[in-house]
Image 1 (cartoon, one colour):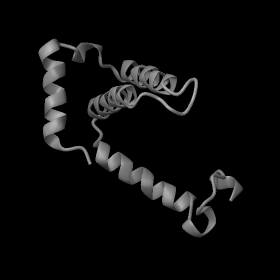
Image 2 (cartoon, one colour):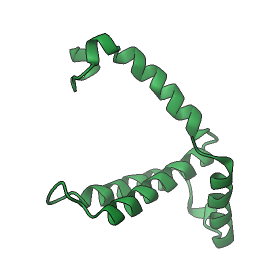
Image 3 (tube, one colour):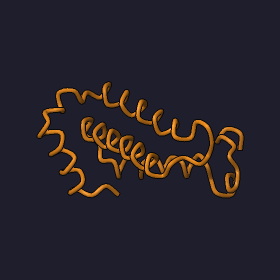
Image 4 (tube, helix red, strand yellow):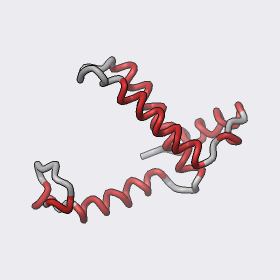
Length: 106
């Protein structure tokens, strides 16, 4: 999912600017939330958000997610796979297909 060259490039950008000192798990989690709010702001007044702005804000969210995963020593690809395994158990296809109901309401 996330290739090593991208992770290396991101680490280089952070190292060149000496930003790692600010990248505590707490600060990165806050940054994810802030950037996610900026992404949501794109859709504040309707469903037709400017695609370039959506991509830019989504990139910010993803960047901070990758930085947080790296900081806590987690592989982002494995995190997603582990969560998919949980989701498959909580939302079996035969009960959840086409439904937006929460798992405890299926």
